[in-house]
Image (cartoon, rainbow, N blue to C red; front, side, top):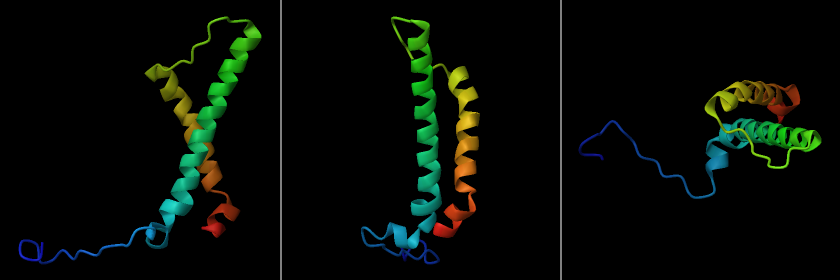
Length: 92
């Protein structure tokens, strides 16, 4: 690397230190991704419970792109609201 690209400096980070060098990965991005997963899970559970209430015998969860695309907007808005809370930002 030094011979072919002398302007690039390599710096090795010891294992287990990512949280020290990349606090956004541990703080904000982890919270954002967790919120997305929680919203997705909430939607799936709600859909299944609605089908139970309707008396549907064979329950399948919609996985079509159009359905997921429309639901993703809500998940992203929920995640944004979660990360945008003042207490959350101060923690990180």
